[in-house]
Length: 238
Image (cartoon, rainbow, N blue to C red):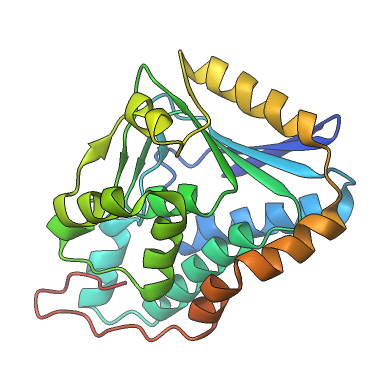
């Protein structure tokens, strides 16, 4: 069964993540990257909307059930995984069209970072949090990850998110203009995100050019990743 599926709806592509809690591992990240390539190269759409098939989770970050044991046995795929995950964040950040995340469930840790890679966010209000629990997981952010959070949240909320691990609701995020709308349900979240994306109809060329300029500082950090060593307890350091 595919981990990612997508379809075209007028001028937008609707991509559905179907990997359960959509935790990042090499296989899921590669399928996501392939789908993004196919949408760019095989369609003429000018906006992308991403939702989850899971009833509760939009994206739950790294697949720690695989990653922690892999680190312990010094699996060579660990470094490959981190590089592939970095590519996902970069691909979304610089995707050559408008991107809209329809947060149909929880976005935690790496999933919250993925949400911050999008241009616009819609979020369901009846279920789901946006949360960066890295402070409790002993996982520091890479500089580009910090930059993604800072471009999405107001500065005071960045500190709160990073240093307390607070779980933000859709209503809270709507009030501070992080999400465009807190929606009544998952279906309503997708409906609103799709309608907004369709209404924009902006050319790929100008969107690409603007992202290259506005996201240039983040791109520089992504091009110069220095990954810390793993800590003594085997907890993965991003």
